[in-house]
Length: 304
Ligand code: GDP
Image (cartoon, rainbow, N blue to C red):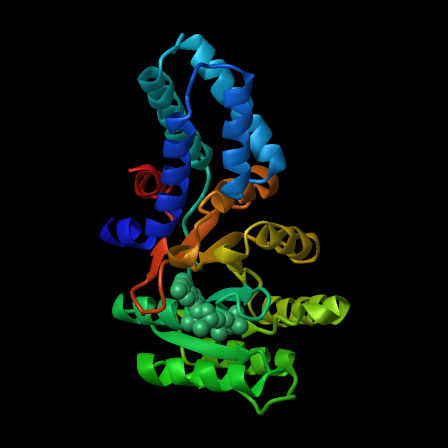
């Protein structure tokens, strides 16, 4: 909870400040007021469609509760926003799935710089601390830096890394890693992948091939295909998510850099248009700054 509090400071101040400014200019509950409210939601990166829908719901709620003065209206609106954020998470599976027996495989996809390698490093550490035997696969063979970075995390976490030199075949690396995970009874294999979006067709083909290699060796894997998105890129993250989801079936989203984003609204936008649950959030660069996504804590951190 502490982490959510500090990690979301930026989101909170932007959202909170704007909400305060909205009520500072409050005269009456009229269409101008709701126009300003909608604008504020768009500014918080919930997206046009979601902002419109939210504004309609808030308008109805204000009417229903017969709120008239500033205090009544602000209370109704904040409470309703909290309800909506929380509600959207209900019945939604925010948990990571593990294999009943044999190695679990999590495949990480997303564009360069989104935070894939960092997320894998953090998660490897946490799983290791929880007593799991973890293996990493450096499936981003396109960039030498990516391989090196994963190896550094491996050293830090004391977790082995299967890798090849830059330019090697990513599917071959993944094949070796899956085989080793099986032979040496690893509990969890975390697979990094390349994220060059300049060559979308090749990237998607590569991801497809990697997936096929995994399934051939372990029919129930990968248990998760996690799309890593940088929250600070706002609506851009949303369009990336849509693109990836079209070719690679995504089971969950890791939303990174929420500590650096003034736009926590992207969580709502993703939910509303993709129906893929946010499973993990990155709230900083340190090893403990990766947390499971808890909608209620998120709301609490955002609107407190
Ligand atoms: P990749 O290309 O997708 O593997 O991305 P990286 O893991 O290399 O991350 C890109 C940059 O984002 C690095 O400088 C990371 O330290 C940073 N980063 C990743 N996750 C977070 C986060 O949750 N918060 C912050 N502030 N920085 C992050």
